[in-house]
Amino acid sequence: MRMASTVHRLLQSIWILAVAAVCLLNALLNAPSTRALPIFARQTGQSCVACHAGGQFPELTPYGRMFKLNGYTFGERTVPVAVMATLDLTKTRVNHDASGNIISPKDGLPIFDAASIFLAGKITDRIGAFTQFTYSNYDHQGADGRWIGHWASDNMDFRYVDRIIGDANDLILGTTLHNNPTMQDVWNSTPAWSYPYVSSSTSTVGAPQFLPIIEGSLAQQVVGAGGYVYWNRTIYAELSFYSTADGIWSFMSKGNKAGDPNHPQIYLRGQNPYWRLALTHDWGPHSVMVGTFGLNVNVYPNDVNSFPNFNQGVTRYRDIGFDAQYQYLLEPNTFTAQARFIRENISDPNNLVFGDSAAASLKSLRLKLSYIYQARYGVSLSFFNITGSPDSAAYAASANFSPATQGWTPEIFWIPVQNIRIGLQYTHFTKYLGARSNYDGHGRNASDNDTLFLYLWAAYW
Image (cartoon, rainbow, N blue to C red; front, side, top):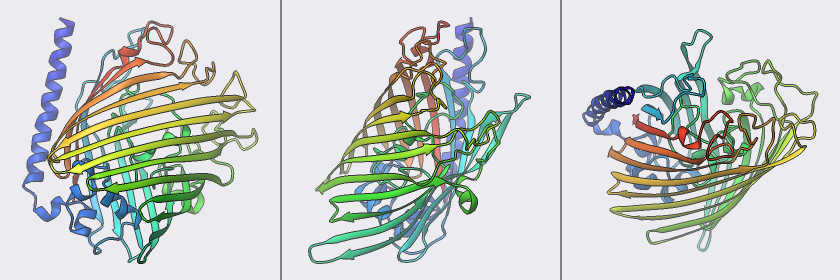
């Protein structure tokens, strides 16, 4: 009876989300065509497929990468405003702990997840910007158990670019000011814009719990300034430096502040370097890239009240990554393969994070394949594997004190119009926090965290 009731509630929730999707889709299909194009498509006069591989935003094509590298300045200035929203439903295989307590309160329920507003596009012939502000509808729960929403800065990127074209040379010289390491990159194999492109915000178990710091911990916490060159569409090189996004830069971390237990500000010591080198080649419908990148960052600890403690030293993270991407773009077929490996060496001499050792390591591997037919029907398959040094303080939730997590994410999706996507993901864990079974010492298995995720992702301009 309990299983039948659970299935009934899940089917009912999916039906509600499907009805909402149909209503939204109908509104989009009947909107004026000029408003159905995104900011950049309106600016350039190109369709979304020109910039996004098979129409799968945010994955970029060679043209989309050149548009970004040229500072978002192609085309003519236009109305620089757009909005985006996600509706979704998450279902965890086992949504209770060993004591019977619910893990994710919104599990199995359709929700309006988040909405973003964008201000972006060409400012002058050499200056352009991309800015995003996001409202999370189910950000956290208050003391009374009610959900609280939250407005915050999201990805931001301001660019000044000059392009020098000669008989034998095509050189792009650019500067960037941004607030998320690797969001300035133009390949979807680096962390900020990598797969999965959309995921649940309410599930606490549907993703790896520990990742290298470059894979998101500093997002919207820092300000990065740097310069890059791209020579003959072959060699890309960048050097940037990161510091805390406070003071005059606090607009880039709006929504995070010292003393906020739900959104504490991360403080860095000094200027922290990031480097990037990539070799690229395009021929016919093919495009390939192999690259490497790295980040050295020194992080102050926060105290129990979420205020920074500048007197205990820092934890030093040294991330080195290698990535590659291949694309085949020829109507009606779009194929993309991506690979990324990151090794993080951690020095923690004052045991601010790690309790068993003053040194540790963390490794992250992500592989992804996707195929899209007629810029409308798509499938993806991703594999992830996290390994690292065991530690009783950093990974206390694991009975083995290990961050090791491994799994697969297959996905199917449909793009009925250029600016809307409906998808279904399933994340299957073959290992979680160091073990396949009983990873927490209380009988929970890795596969208990398997997560079904149904979403509708739409943008409107």
